[in-house]
Image 1: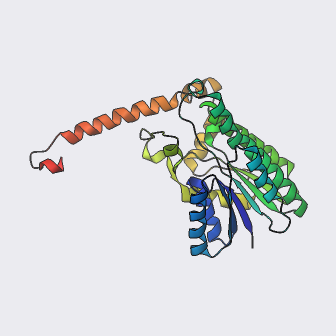
Image 2: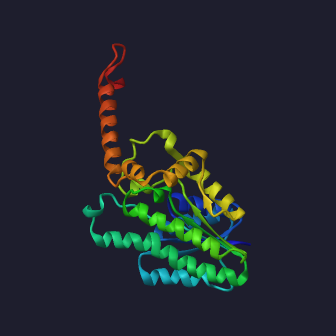
Image 3: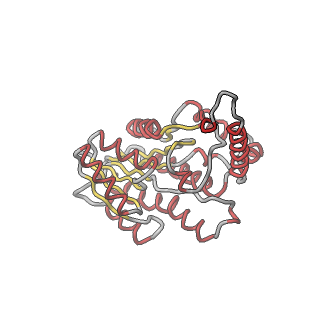
Length: 282
């Protein structure tokens, strides 16, 4: 039976990866910071799908804890067939508004962890001539929306280069580049995304399903949905001055302002009571 190791596996896309992989018969190694939540997720998955679920609590920004996960990837007996590098989080605020220590911690999670775990997994998988690495990146990597976008650009390019190096080894590397996905990501970063049209959002089950299909095919880039593939091509090919104008680091401020204005308009409408309404219906 195949076994997958998923980082950031207690929420968002990572949680969806865990459930879908278990549903297709994969044993799991789940990695996340919150030990209690990790145990609860593992128990639920075991109960529903009857697969083996190993839990490894770890903060991947900590080098010693990251090394423990890397060592687990090299286990010659309980082998890992699929590595899903999903752990990550956003920071609210501009580059200069946030302490550099917070930026460093985020970069350790978003980039260094991907580097270290991909290295450990790839070397072990190449020896067996079998395996796959799926790195969760983002279409934000084609934009200029701050350090997070820059880190995702690195993940995409790194994965592409790794995929080329692995050609002919029986091991593949895929970068998942979703757009906006309905998960806890923005809520955990205290970001209100109410200003975005509903059509821009993708559902996590669809994104994960497409990513796993692309990984199974050995695709290098996985961009779910036609609209985001089109947006990705535009962002990649558009003149950089235009990209900078459209996706500068203050994009969240503009979005938040739009969201506040929309909320105020909705509140105003709610206070206008029709003649046939009771007070409690306004």
